[in-house]
Image (cartoon, rainbow, N blue to C red; front, side, top):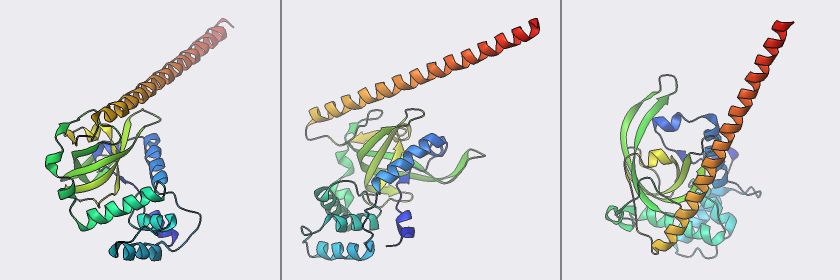
Length: 258
């Protein structure tokens, strides 16, 4: 596979006005997510032919003989996440095949999303949310033509805080979607927390809700640490600015006396 094709494998970013308004620091953070999701192997083999081999094995229901590089070739070819060992990648391929040739609505029915988790989603949650879809956002006029809404059911596979504003960003692996511009199954989607919660968010119940409480607790600790760090940086910046003003004021007084 040529490098041009690999360059097309990018994590999709939520198409909304507020997503486009983010500063460069947060855009860099989203780019880093793309890099992690699609890091490539050193051995540059034709991904297309390897992917075809995986498809043939899938049709014959015999993919246990697959090697890691063959798994990743299939995942790259379908713009999916390649992070994980062989077993993780094989499981992802099986799920993609099942969702692609079956029905995500049947496997993850809308009726199974019964718990309102607006404002408190964590990694491991299988969530259902709505988002506005825009044709194109204009950074000068700060407006974009609204095409409509999209409903997304997905699994939260990663969460992070922006270096600049400590704002939460989730990576959601799409299970199914409906509405405007439907997304391919298992495609990774970056969503800012405030946009994820904008029109209410529902989740499925965990097999063991006690496990979720632990994950949620860790998330809250990281959030508190991130906010504390941001507050400290603000104070340092404020002190530095005040010292600079004081030094300038003393310099002006000294010049007047002379």
